[in-house]
Image (cartoon, rainbow, N blue to C red):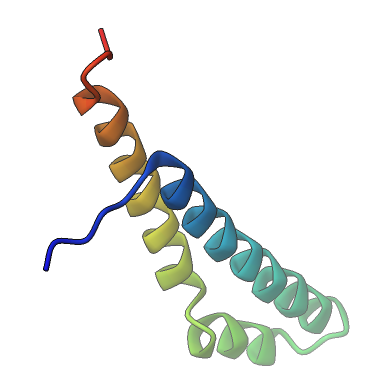
Length: 74
C-alpha cells in the first residue's frame, strides 16, 4: 500500500524531529557545562542526535521534492 505524504505532514514530521534534537542538545549542553563532557557526548550518541538531524534533513528534502513535483509548480 503506497504511503501518502503531504508537504504539511512532512514539515510536521521534520519539526518533531528537530524539537527532539534540540531537547537532546540542550540536555547534553547542560551536562557539558556542569563539567560532564563525556556524559554529554554519550547522551548525543545514545539518544541518536545525529539520526534525528539526518531524518529531519531527509524530510525537508522530500518536502522540496513534493513542491517541485506539484502540478502547479513552475
